[in-house]
Image (cartoon, rainbow, N blue to C red):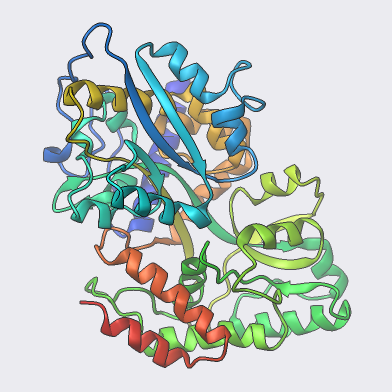
Length: 450
């Protein structure tokens, strides 16, 4: 019976996520029957790589992004580790002959750190990050089929895998995911006597009421236009106005009238005093801290916000709702998926042994015994079927996010220029916050794109 439940839940997740990605739903069958691949030619080979020669030791340089306050403990220090050990120690105990040189890097710094290491000829063996296309197009990455064990590959949600395909080749595997929703302080809105806003006009009215009621002591609405997540702000408002990063044909279209109107609206919220005072420097985590402290009434945040608030000692009576959209436009949730990828190393003396070591790292990381704890600890959504049943059993709220995923869209991260566009829209937003013309900023960015 448990197996049947797991398969049904996995199928529901796969269908929901496929809807987010805008592709036809894929059928998820047990791993022994069906491979969850974007393209059969891209799937890993049946045979595994040959083991390293006896006595040889392989060291893998691994960079992991800082997801929250527990990340360092989980991977490095052990205070939140597994069975009294941290991730690195346990991996090395179970995989003799493979050493991990694992570094946790903040999201604000990781792009610079990785680019510097690449420029110095010292790219990591394994990287956890959100972007991948620029590395793939520069010939720096290994195809996933070179190192990912077949059973693990079949376990990934197909729609997640499809987000990392260029020219029928899979270049990265999904690490984890989150979906964004509007979180609001239930008690606060009830005290003010307002309903949850569903349109942009309602958002302004509600924000004004909150501002007046609390005499400026509470920020009604949170905006993060920092280098940490400014691209998410661009998505929230442009998708909620019928715009976005690309047009219906998948071509870059960052300067459409819908996008200009959307960003002008967001900047207007700041100018009217409805938001946190410094959107260019106050990150999502700063906003979450404000929300946990009762200083922010409404915030667009990922599904792990309740976990974050609890870790901060907050006891907010919170609920979720769809993101407000412009009148007559469709609300759209934002699906965010990070990745794990492997870089080439032409100097490795035994390529097959290195590939196998990378595969062992992935198998260990995604093993439900480890992965379920990691995903639930940070409050994320999983990337593999094998984790679904355990997560639903441990947290009933997880199941509700399957329906939220039905309305989400993903960043166009498979396009080669995504990293440039991501940084470009953030710069445009920050310049607009400082008084620059939104249309001129987006026009200038569009001119740089194919």
